[in-house]
Amino acid sequence: MATSAPGRAPGNLRADARRNRARLLEVAHAAFVAGGVTASMDDIARRSGVGIGTLYRHFPTREDLVLALVADDLERLSVRADELTTAGAPDGVEQWLGELVQHNLTYRGLAESVLVASGQPTALGAACDRVHAAGGALIRSAQSAGTVRIDIEPTAALDLASAIAWATQADPDDARRGELLRIALDGLRA
Image 1 (cartoon, rainbow, N blue to C red):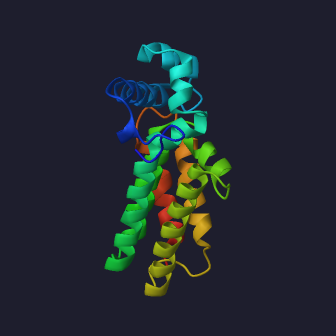
Image 2 (cartoon, rainbow, N blue to C red; image 1 turned 90 degrees about the vertical axis):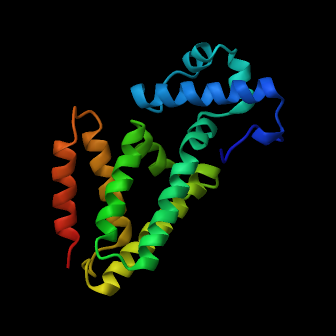
């Protein structure tokens, strides 16, 4: 994971501390998927079989815990945008925005957390900024190739993906989400 307790990287932890950290991440992932990123930290600690102090030793803030869970996926999205930009994939924006919507749906409430964190001097803010930069480059590349309208600001397209995730996070299936994404993509096409 990209984040660790202050002063100790996950690989430098004792075996029992590594197990506790891994269990905390596993339980937090399930809790965030089920109830969103505002799930109770006390409940996460209890379900992990550790005390709240152990949770906070590994993850001093909720943002640290969220970042540990999403940092790898944010980096994957950034790399994916870079790959699609380099490849000049004609449907790259469509593929990537769909992946971004899915990422934002992984944890209900993440879209709001990302909007708050973007541009902030925190690790989550830096990861969000990297995704926005890579996604923006992909969209600008598609604009240069003539597949995306040139009057669209890249940040507007990224915000659409977050908005679609937010608006459909409680939907029982992907039908409306897919429809909204198709509408957004139709509006972006040159």
